[in-house]
Image (tube, helix red, strand yellow):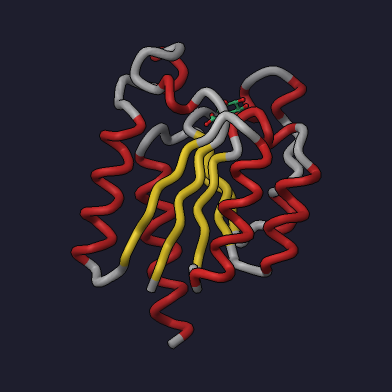
Length: 147
Ligand code: DQA
């Protein structure tokens, strides 16, 4: 199957960005490891990061045309602001898992609300980069059992 991993604003700074909160792995470390892990299990995985809301939306629209089966998304700060990305995900009707490196519920109140959680298959937060791997395993199990 085909899996798309989307990362929102400032996640290109991973590795140097508030490492006490977000860890020391870079986004390319995380992405490479995920792609290897997906390939080992017979799936194809693509990673995209953008700081721009409309670019993320256009990748979500393209995902439908490209036959993407599952999306793993860390919307980053757009988690707390973006009706537009939520609507894009609902519009293409591709199942998705929401991931956050940090435990957003243990942080500022404005991070406690997400525009995605109620329409996600599930939400993983607080496990750092490992959260993406957990999301991938959950996605693969779901994809395999849907066949
Ligand atoms: C984040 C949490 C968000 O609140 C924040 O704006 C981010 C990253 C996370 O992965 O922990 O940029 O999504």
